[in-house]
Length: 323
Ligand code: DGY
Image 1 (spheres, rainbow, N blue to C red):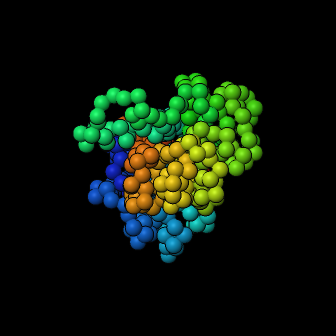
Image 2 (image 1 turned 45 degrees about the vertical axis):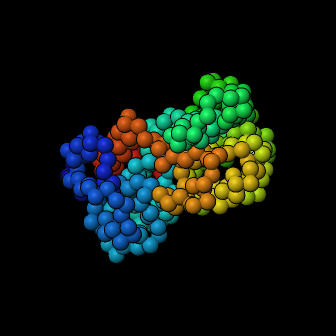
Image 3 (image 1 turned 90 degrees about the horizontal axis):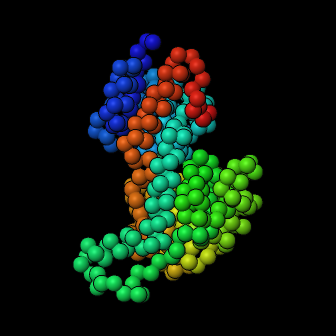
């Protein structure tokens, strides 16, 4: 294969960088800082393939390049709402992602957040570190029971189902799902799950609500003030999907006024900046977008991108093409 010029916009796991370097003429953004719009435009003009991450914003303006060399964006991640697919397609650029390989680890982080938030683990740890623990007492840091509770899953794709598996078989939770389109009856039956028609119908029934839907315009602020108001007053919201799915100001208010029990967030709108209003909420557990952050998964994601690139440049349709 002729050596195509390939750009990694961030540093990747060493084993994957090494393999990519054997196959392609590889450049790595060793500064490991997000590239701005102008740098991304230059990348599209100079490289045959650009391999971005969630921190690279491919807006329609970025694709407005006089002469585009790039033929493929091999996104390092399953979510691609940071890439304007319409503009990529109009520029003749194929976009791929990395499904499957990160589903289990992302569901692990959703479970972590659910357990931590319900059992006040972050709050408890902060108390200890501050030297404020006054010892065991019956009324101290009483949380909410997870086992046997009802979990609402918004988006029943690969990650939503990995979450259902943990919650149902590990914790005996009852599963209610909302998804577009309808989920096959045999898939629901696997988790003894019920599908409801609308999110509005799901929210009042659940003790925990976990978001596993795509980001982007279609789900922007899906969890707004009105919908947060439909949740039970002691229910918890978990988000490992995309920050923009939740209206953060509305969530901060709900947490502050106690109209919901608490929340766990791994993703934020405008990350890495966290709104000041959220930082003060004790009934909120926050993680810095760790869903896929295990060594095994990050390597698997990289090799999945590599497979897509090799297929593409050898004239086959890449298995993870999204446009
Ligand atoms: C994903 O795979 O979508 C992760 O959130 C990182 O982008």
